Image 1 (cartoon, helix red, strand yellow):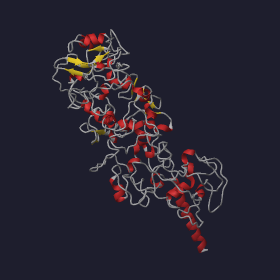
Image 2 (spheres, rainbow, N blue to C red):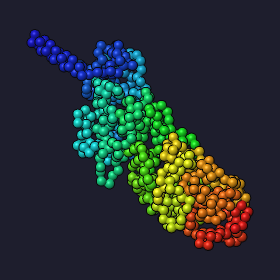
Image 3 (cartoon, one colour):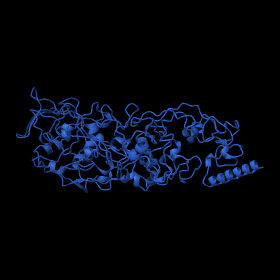
Image 4 (cartoon, one colour):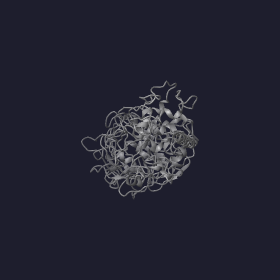
Length: 608
């Protein structure tokens, strides 16, 4: 009798405890009972029994596990920026193994050990089935001891503690496991993203329990640095009801989940929602995923745009600053999504614009030394347009003049813009010429060719010439930057470049009695130079005759600067002839002497 009373006491105590536990539990999709909220349902007498067998002695470990464990071998997460040792296989009957007994998709729910196989109806959502290839899911069951990294909270590897003050996000026996982020008994702690998260994950709270964008470590780069004040962290743009931009109502609340997906990520490496620029396109394609709509950057690439990567030369964050043999220009080459800020005002050259905060760069001094982060706008451009090997002339950008004077690599702009150059446009350094420049405007002209824009200043940006043809800095409605243009060489405005069938031969594209307006062949030059002053011969007595005959500026002038030194061409005022158009005068080399205002050459079958 006493034994019976004791049994009843134990039963009542257990029942009372179970009831108390259930008050705080909401199994949600893990409740397979009939009828229940799960897409998969069975006929067991209690929902707990699908996973637990309270009176069975199982060899599968705790907590009294009842679901048949998967024997699958998994391919664990890895990427070019993942520096930890490869993760070992999750131990059988470990906490992550219990989750995978359903979520790898090889063992269906209802395959109980204690009670046998139960008939189930419905199927699991595909998004909740991860398979055996876990490279597109957040790393877990890491190799111990945990390795520290600049973007992790300082206590994670050293003390095994996350930064979550509530202790909801915690390591499991010193490791990251599924239950670090998920509680299988409570589906909706995060009511917007009901994915059994251990806490509300809006504004990246769950991610920042382990990842610290504000940590500073000597000599190491934190890839998340600058996040707190970035546009992606603070933007209030609402998002559409689509999983491609995260579950929350606006960009700032989505935070990390705007671009990253912790399970079954399409971009795999770094858990991106799309590979590199495809990730950005979810919001920056002018569509209605975001409201108010963002400017359509991807529409610019449909013009003459920077080259997107192919399968053979995709962008990777582990690349060196100098992009050798890698002809591509993804968003991530020129923008740091964790630190980029909105460019609300257009700062004066040469400083980097806010939209390019914390991007990589290359020193203009040697074209090799990394500048991280880039301070000047041109430093980012020099990753490809400086000393990098493997550069090639791409026909889609139009005809490229071959200058008589150049130094080795015609596509290396560093010698052309350098302070040692005889003359150059002032990109890498302020204007230094002592020669008068009567045609130079006080202000650059807006895209309409009439209204004054930014003050000329003493230095210019690469994007003052190479820019979207509808950019908003100079009065258009499109995005800024060299994404794409309807004009060749990604020029902001029309600029016709003369060409001939052979040096000295007839020029095939003349523009006689030229249109000097914004619609004319010299509109790019007219942004900064008053063409009426030029044809008035204020700086050179033969300008009017050449221009009225229809010759392009490109025949005599290089657009960047003198890329070398020549004994026959002095090189002031960017005079450097196109060797494909201008030929030698007999055996005499092509020459130009600014001091005597003389030249020797043949152009358009005319001897000078």
